[in-house]
Length: 314
Ligand code: SF4
Image (cartoon, rainbow, N blue to C red; front, side, top):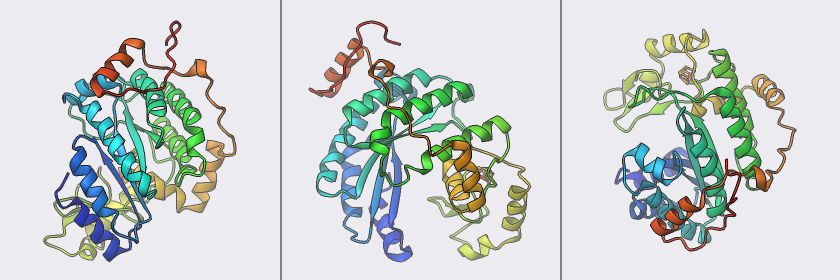
């Protein structure tokens, strides 16, 4: 995390009228994260600050996958520290995100139940699909049917905490659109990257989205020079022709929400009026006794309130 993180955030709040900040993190550097968030929350104009802890599976898998010892334990320590901030500042919300691949579907299934039970102040467990460049080229996306089942499981499990959550209503719309996009291998909702959304990288590069090459750099040109350039116009034409597609939530969100016809279409497709059935205890895929003991030993957490099925664990 950049040392100037809080300062940059506060600049955006003051100069650009930003009111909501959403930050994914691996949660490894607890003290630095806490200091930065406490600093950012000193901005009275800020309405919402969401920290999204990125977790790939249960502790053993997560640590191995990230090649970082105690990565999961550190993330949980960060969660506990964030809860303390939240106790006196409700603008801070805590989420988790897991990126589904062909290797961690069972892991996420158990992780989501674990998080729901352990982290009572966590509002949301976001599920993404691996996309773009990856360090390990043998890593693939999950089987689509399996992904759909996992999402429904998470949706049902977390439904009580989704009630009234800002953004809660858009989640099923995003998931439906992602699944349809992969199934059809095209933009199911016309993408508005480069019109309603833009990426500015830490080095000043500006791009319409994370998948297209930068169009220029703010150190050498103004934003509007880059935004109105011929190159940007050609790229927008390419996007309108649907020459590219992806499942990036960052760009799907505005593309759905700010195109009324598409919004209606996606709401119908996602059947948003259907209330998810609560997940029965027997349907929850919980951690085994061994894993639970290991977790308690590693994290020193004395009170994870889970019921471990002694038989029939999936
Ligand atoms: S569909 Fe994906 S790759 Fe194409 S412009 Fe939109 S966000 Fe970028």
